[in-house]
Amino acid sequence: MQSKQFSRISFALVLSLATSVGMAASANDMPSDQVRAYIPISNGTDATLGEMKLSNSSASFSKLTGEMQLQHAGVRKPDNVDTEFSGDVYQVMNADAFFKSNKGKNGFCDEPVRWLTIGESAVGGIRVGMLSSVDWKKYSPTSTEGCSADTFMLKDQ
Image 1 (tube, rainbow, N blue to C red):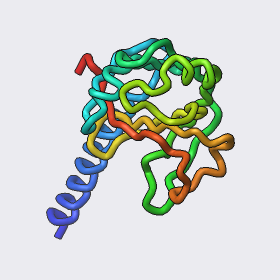
Image 2: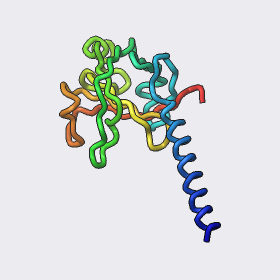
Image 3: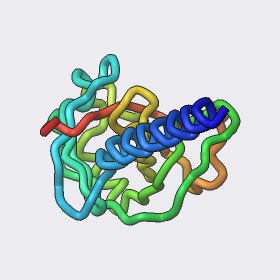
């Protein structure tokens, strides 16, 4: 009896440690103070955005001109089934100027991207969402203001 109980406790401990290590590994992909390079892993992203350079204060894409100046604005929790635009929310401080430099390029968004959402991806790496809504808190899965959701992985890995 004690052997079975010990086995269950051991299994639960191993499972807990494995889950924590897996979560830490994907959390490591999140933006930091340093600018880091990311490669696209979702379909079509390489053609539209290319590689991304990302930090807590900026984002740039190899297929677009200039960089987005970012300021952390909060955290958007996933709606029932919508995780495309959940995670940390960053306001794009130079949204109009960035859009003007990139309008019509490679299928880039039809309106200025005012918010970037960055969350962990279910397939590894991070999921970067682009919202054109004036108020990110009012975005819903039925809104038409989500113009892009792409998955990236740290290039160094």
